Image 1 (cartoon, rainbow, N blue to C red):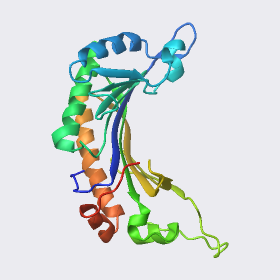
Image 2 (spheres, helix red, strand yellow):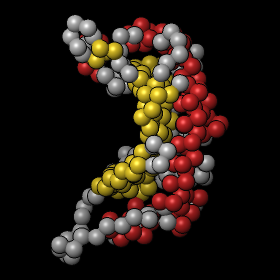
Image 3 (cartoon, rainbow, N blue to C red):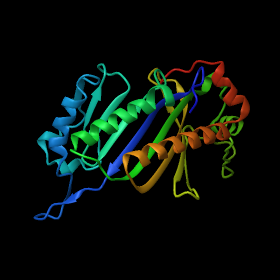
Length: 255
């Protein structure tokens, strides 16, 4: 998405996955090159992403117990973003609003990460799925919040109504919609209530574009650019004009 002055963006995540091997003796799916690749990746990204930490104690268990889960994080500074994540059969690039710009920062980091990933796996890879996820959030009290139904109807091009008890208002809400696109992508929209780190009420929504397809690195980057443009379009369409305009005026706290 093009950068807004006061964007509600909390996090953007680009995830790629590849097929796993089948262990001949057990029949269990496994990323047979993962352990060697993990060690190589630590060395390859050490200059740019010197801080690494295990998200889960996967060394104590069989690696296949964490198939398609990110188990190791690589950061430029402790607790900082952007970050890279690797797990058996999965790799992600994550960033936040503080540093995010698709062309200036995120896409170059994605290119760098994929190049180092393929080098760590000792050659080009054939990816089988890709996901681009944007997570946005606003403090609802900045918008004169009264109830979730009214708030969502006023600010999003989406609404809901409960008619079984007009005196009863929901304290929390959660909605999910899944769409199939003509080009083979899927669009998932998730809307719900939550709180930020200060305990303030927030509306949180996710825009997720995904595709199950055989990609090489060049195809993956091309798809990512297309998914980014589409996500930006959906973001603008999903927000009511006044709500979208507020992102140039009000600074929102993070989750």
